[in-house]
Length: 395
Ligand code: NZQ
Ligand code: ZN
Image (cartoon, rainbow, N blue to C red; front, side, top):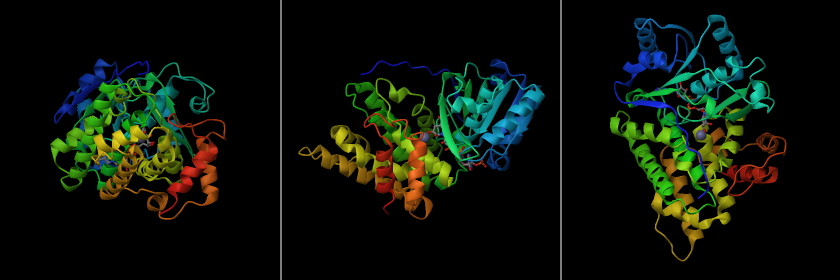
């Protein structure tokens, strides 16, 4: 078990009436003028945006709004947000939406506390030292951004998608009402389920082998999300199922399931090039890559993959061969992805194979121009990443 720090300062308010606590939470965390940040319209259609505005009005809390965050959020809107907040004297950011909205708000929050170009943080030229406080009203369980230390943004020119990790950006509070997720399209529900599982899988597949408690929690979380994910697609308004998935989404990425393990996150880094290049949904991109990453790195720790196969995916243990058990587990995950409507390779994700040029470019960007290695279970350089994209490219 490796040493760890566990820091989750986000105040979670979970349940059917959780939104009612919004004005009190904004006040508690010092908000006097709020930017309400949201996406492409789901919160308008659902009435949530109108409800949030009404609540703030009734509490006498001033606000301005900025909608239009797209999935795989863009830096250009962040710049707009920074300008708007400075002009209006905003001192609190409220993200009403999913990972894209939350991340966009997090980057605005960094930008408000920095005189230079906020992209400097993503270019390695500046380390953030402060961030304007932000809160979340979550509408899609997936990214875990409502409790995570991560903010992922895409620079419009060159479609460069990068993440930054710092405790500074962890939301002050997260309001989570599972009923708000009833309207999610099946594809987004399934992509969310995939992403949630993957955040724990990225922490689970390591060389460390003596973190029994973390393993037990991680396996329970992955099993729960897998089972409830499949069921909720047939029963989208089932509160119990939606609630399990929503809570798991936060726990999967607030590092609870990473205590004592060395995280990998190569699948994420490889996927981010798919969502920036093809504007793919992040969770779907993960499903298209993971089985191939798993095949590629399996030999590094076959018993770990076998444990996952038995304890999470429920395949019988072939005691004579951990490799065979492991491969059966990967095949079962491919079946699972297909059952929930997710792709399990690149042609299924983007409707055609990627070209060799696209693969080379994505591998180049993922490894920051061949200067960094991805992952930990097996450290992957440019050639490894190309090999994984090629494996994923076969239908
Ligand atoms: O834009 P609107 O109209 O709101 O529609 C959204 C969007 O099209 C829709 N949606 C959200 N809630 C809904 C709803 N539709 C109907 N009913 C609802 N209740 O769903 C679509 C996807 O939303 P998005 O916010 O993009 O999804 P997600 O939460 O999966 O976020 C994805 C982004 O998060 C990043 C990803 O890379 C991607 O950019 N990630 C952020 C992480 C973090 N900060 O910790 C970690 C993750 O690994 C991930 O990289
Ligand atoms: Zn993710």
